[in-house]
Image (cartoon, rainbow, N blue to C red; front, side):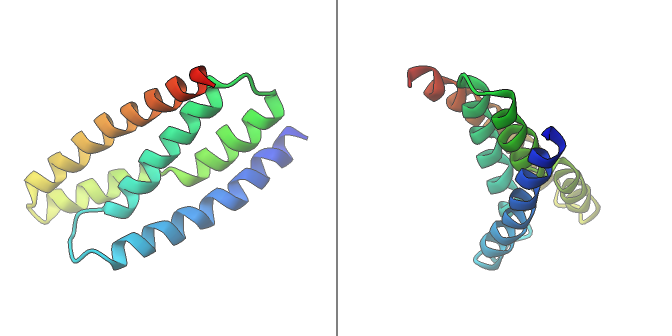
Length: 118
């Protein structure tokens, strides 16, 4: 049953990641990966809420592992950072790493804090 819940969450998270990324990138005339930033930061926020709430193992599998696991994307973050480095846009590559780390951790902390307040 848990595997099905993970798959169901991923079936929603992965297409949502693609759609959000494309929608954001189409609105920015920049090589900076704004779409990946959005999905990774929002996924970190959602995961923070999920782990901060007293949820069942089934809901954690559906939302935490399935949905957030498919919504967020470390591999794309790595690829885009390397692409920025190859294009010699070193400042943007550094900003991508710094923003991902600081904003992702901050969003996860905010999610846990909000969940604790509920």
